[in-house]
Length: 529
Image (cartoon, rainbow, N blue to C red):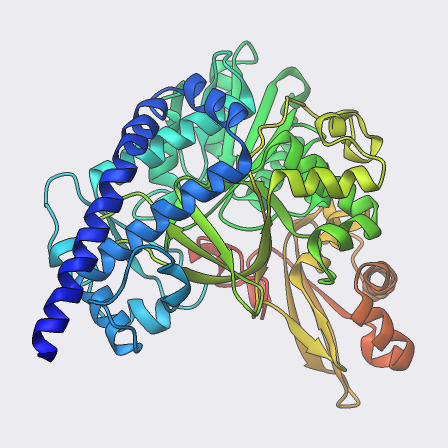
């Protein structure tokens, strides 16, 4: 009897899932058709109520999860061993019953083929990306031709929205090879204009700019600190930056508004994308309105609190497409993503990269800002949103939901009960002209001073050590202490109680010296020592 009951439940669940798939089929056809052209997709986002987009996105995510539980060997086993009755799962409301996945709980437990639909992959058109290993171990991620095609099209659409339709030459300075960002950025930007992929090679970038000349309109893509390093190197060589129209597309790591301010001295616009090799690149992107919201939050701590909560860090702010990425936030404030498309070889269901952050819909942001006297549709006019050279590029906002990201939850040091984040240190250092003009990188750690007292330590990698002495380092430490006290409430409290322990120890090194000796072989700079 129990076997009959089990079979009946399984058949009914399959029927419900099939029926649900049929229900969504017309929407799938519509979205695929609309998604082929930038103008169609943008128009759909402008006229569709945000609450409807969110609801349809949830239905699609539930279907993707239901399908993965039945067709992906690893995921079916993972769900079953987590105590969930896979045959008894119904698509409706499924996400609330499924456990989170991450590297430790899911990726490390199953091999790559087990994590794919049907336990196998088509060889033609399939690629393997490698993550940077910023968490200590590089991972490999398998992707099929269909999912890569969608990702490349989304990159092209994002570039069109951010940088317009005028002819554009992209110089791709992301690391090339097996890493996802460089390879896919090249293919995505080929849809938008001319592309030269040189990787993070200063000589090749500068020579390419000189060869083509200032009659072209350029987009340079790369990691944020590298683009700052490029500008500094160009200045040293006397490169005529002022003659060129330059735009920047950055990613791979977070960026403070202080670093954006530095880049905006030469670039007309600077946009960042958000993604994770674990899931896919291009999960979200900055827009004129998201940048304006973030810069307003930087100037107004009360608005930052209302939008993003009590975390002392200023998060990066993006917008995302809820039809293909369903975002949730767990109980400890980490963002969880389900890719709701069915074209992934290895589905990502409720996947957690352990970035702390949150989501808020467009109408919610509009309502909060209206309470402070700001019109979200005209936020680009606010002086707080301007850059060093005046107003930043502005466009009519697209009413997509906002995603904010503080960064990895474990990326911090603690001194005297105070959590100090690399984002705070970066904001201070790039806001200090005596440091930012010569800084290539920095590293934050805790060291014991000569009295055995733990203190925050900031190592600076400087491309020019002329005039650097103990007096310079002491003055830099005092400026760092004072500015950090205005940014970080925990630090400010500990500073009052333990002033000696909270004064940072500043050390300086030539490029590649001391703790930066291994950076030449790293894809991303290391911020925590």
